[in-house]
Image (cartoon, rainbow, N blue to C red; front, side, top):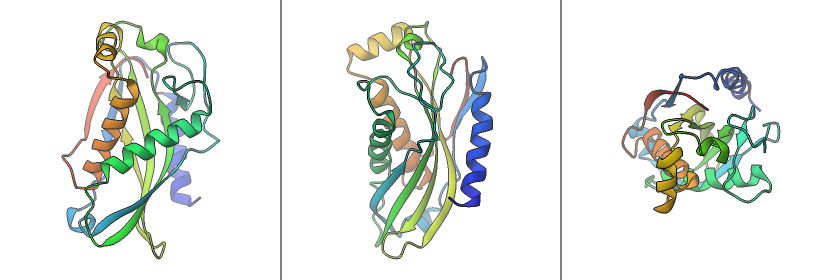
Length: 205
C-alpha cells in the first residue's frame, strides 16, 4: 500500500470516530477528473478491495461502532457483499467512458456504514448511508497509474420510519439507493455525468 493511501486511510479512521455525533455534517465529495482527460479512457475493469482490517458489526442497535454495517443481504461474508455492491455501482457509474485507452478503476473501500433495521425503524429524517472509498485509475495494459489515489465520499441521507416503509412497498431498498448514489458519484467524479457533490447535516450515522 502506498504512503498516500495509508495517509488517507488514517485520516478517514479519525473522521469515522466523530461520525456518530448528532447533527454531524456529511457530504458527497471528490476532486473531479478533467473531461479532457477522462474522455480518452474506456472502462476495462473495476477492481474493489474491501480490507479485512475494516471492522464489521452485526449488533442490533441504532449506531454500531464499526466500519461495515450492512443488513439487507442474508447473514454471511459482509466483505464479499460490500465488494459486489461497490463493484456493480462503480461499473455502472463508469460506463460512459468511451475513449480508446482501456483503464482499470482500482478502489479500496474505507467505510460502508448503512442503517441497521433498528435504525431504519426510527422516526423520519434520521440516519445516513456513509460510503467512503479511495479510487485510482490505471492503464489496463501497462499498469501505469493515470490518476493517483483519490478520496471519494459518497454519503447520502437514508430513509427511515414511514418514508422507508413506503419506499420498500414501492420496491426501493437500501441497496438500490446506495448503488444509484455511488454510481452517480462516480460518473460525476469522472466528468461523464452531472456533478453529484453536496453536503448535508443530519443526526445518525
